[in-house]
Image 1 (cartoon, rainbow over the protein chains, first blue to last red):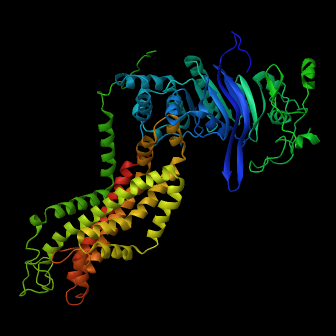
Image 2: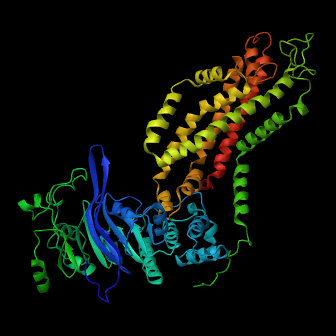
Image 3: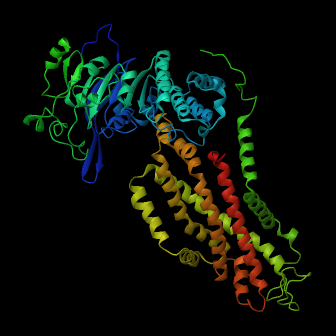
Length: 332
Length: 298
């Protein structure tokens, strides 16, 4: 662990070599296969990757909705992967999640008020007499109306439902919220509203987000740092500007070169990866990416690359990549 | 932190008590459904008959009159008389008690056993669920229901009480199956995951979140099962294993009527008609109740 400086923000969450394997027949689906990173208090960490790369599973494992196969999750100095059910129930107050599906994530048979009241009461957030006012305040803060307290979820649009989900996450006054594709199911115009709401709430409540999405522009909009996942591994992690301007890992490069450019200029290099993403049932040996990597050398088939710091907290999981790009960076 | 209260916002529970408003809405939904209203009215009438048969019956249901055997329906005997000269109308009325009791109590037994076991089995899964509970239900479902009920009654001994227990046990596995399947489907949904992420305990998730979402098919199944139980009780009575004479039951009356279909068709017609009406109205009413709970249908 690095020495903490006075000015450096405190580390809220640390994930160490996290693994989650699902058994299927004799094989194991390695959804998350050894991920380590830290989240500082007050930042937004974006996680991108194509579908099936294990980003949602990782979110659920961090939350301990799924038990990790291996590895540790440290939250505020405690290894929560070792927590008992009773301890976990209290922990739910600190870590919350917002799901993707605005229709499936709300109980159709409970009014918004009943749903929120249940949680507020269970965690004894406010005295009973103040519950109604507290929840109505909360509804206004997420851009709903106090009268929505009495309504059923089916009366709301997708964006409004996602606001209800946000209110539910906020009801317990959490420190960390995992947004699992929180805006992916919404229209673009509504996406922007929800993203801005999340930003506003982050300032107001001093929240920390882990923002999981497959949408590169959404992640760029909201994140401070961005991590890129491929087949259960984190391949690159760096500050937002750094990673978007200077991606080092060949997968990240290919991924970001696919972002359309609105300037109209012909893109110099659009890298198209060959082949399909391998099945998580049958993960390639060595570096998971070597089957599709344009820079792969013989060693990549054998050696599992280390997640190393190339410069100034720019982590890359590739043994081939050199600091050459950093030299190029200067001349750019 | 307090924000301004906007115009028209309800900020006190006293202003409009929401639960009453919701119940009103639900009742309104039920009343708009004409078929359900008809079914409900008939069900209530039948329950009244079952509770107070003496008020409606015109004759004693056991008194035999050998001077008036197999009399067709007339002003004196509205439904005619049976082979022993008993007033059929009064017997049908008294039979409602037996039939409804058999239907309700056996389905009650089936739900009482099947609901909790099915819910726990579906929610917690594991070895218990896969290898014990599901295999037992498989074994029970592989028997024709009437044969199983017959076997059980043969073991317990004849009589209405034992018949009801046997029917209840025979109906249990289908409830267990249905409920387990519903819970299994719902436990993976995001709203359940969200409830777990909120730290709510399993029993609350099961009974406050999952159960209300699975209630619709359970109600439908229960109303169908009441109908099936009434018919099964009738069959058992027909075979002499259910209601013992002279207590009237629609089933035993129907089976007696079978022997007189040509000379005295009313003997089979009226008990059969009552079984039909009862089963139909309970089903219609059940459908209405299901729709009433369905907040999406508005």
